Structures are given as C-alpha cells and as structure tokens.
Length: 252
Image (tube, rainbow, N blue to C red; front, side, top):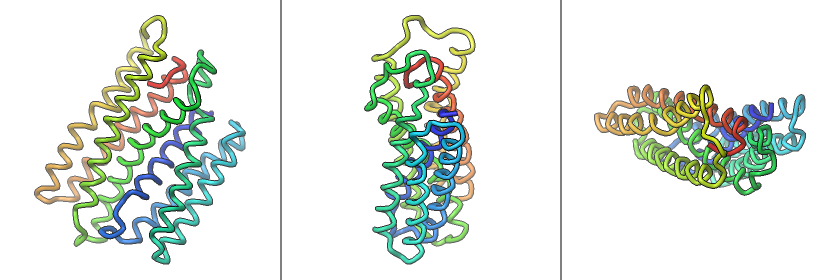
C-alpha cells in the first residue's frame, strides 16, 4: 500500500507547488483557498493509509501536509497570499518526505539499491507533472467563476507542465541508464512500460499544444476540456510508473 501513499504524496506535493508558483496578481484568492483544501484532502488520504497499513514513517509527514493545507486555506481566505504560499511550501517539503520513504522500488526486487536522493528526485519530477496538469485544469474551471480573468496564468501553468514533462523524461532516461535491469522487460511488463511512456510522457505534449492554440481563440472551456485529457493521461502514466518501479526496482 506504500504505492498508494507514494502516488498521493506526489500529487499533493505537485499541486501545492503549482499553487505556490501561480500568480496571485492575476488569480483571485478563492482559487488558492479552495484548492488548498484539495491538498489537505490528499494529505488526509495519505495519512489514513499510512496509519492503517504503512509505511509508518510517512504518517507524521502526511499530517504535516494536512496541517499546511489547512493553514494555507485560512491565510488565503484573509488575503495573506505570501504567507499562504509559504504554508504550501511546507506541504511540498512534507510530500517529498512521504514519497521518499514510500518509494515504489522499496517494494520491488532491488530494495535498497536506489539512494535517497534518487527517490526524492523521482518524487519531485513526478509531482511536478501531476500537480501542474491538475492545477492547470482546475484553473481552467475557475474562468467560469471569473470570466474576465487574464489568460496569462493559465498559459504559465501550461508552460510549467511542458517543462515538467521534459524534466521527468530526462530523469527517467538517466535513471534507466544508471539502474537498468540486467535483462530487458518482456510480456506484460514491456506493455506496461510502453503505456507508461506513451500515455505519461508522449501524449501530453500534443495535448498541451492543442490547449495553447485553443487559448488563442480564446476559448477557455474547450481548453479546459483538453486539460481534462492531459490530467487523465498523466495519471495513467504516473500510476503505471509506480507499478513498474515496484516490479523493476528503479524509477521509470
């Protein structure tokens, strides 16, 4: 079950980081307040699973995510944007700590072969992809509440997601070079590996380009619909990565 804890921690940390990096000048405080509750909820899920089935080392870090999300939501409600972002930064740090101790390879064949820095870097790159995609989709919805809001912050999140995908792909290539298994994957593992790379790294690229072009019309509703698909494919890719990391014992 550390696989679930690790995935949820990556998502929570990535979303908190995306919120902390978003523009408070162009986006209304309500967006940050509401979605700090999402960070809180993800932290609560990670804490519940860690409490029931482990890993025990992740529990208190998950509680820290819950507390940070709650404090951030209050600060944003009172317009204390800088302090709210600082609280979200604490949630990011706690999420990385969770994902590091709940690294999927610890359940795989090569337990102990992946150093802590690699587990943390894997969590950071995966969280950046998941969080930026989810934050962009949620911001697209926010234009229904604030139709006059500028498009600049949504474009910034799209670019952030593209950069996160590039960093994630580069890290996966380096990890495979450093810790590749002696024999190449075959059968179902090879098929899952193809799904991981096609859905998680390749498919989002043209979808983000389509979203960017749609915003030139501009049509935020259609762009949000495309971002839904981006969220789905990145979730498929990173869930596949978690399963493969447990099977192969290395980041993929």
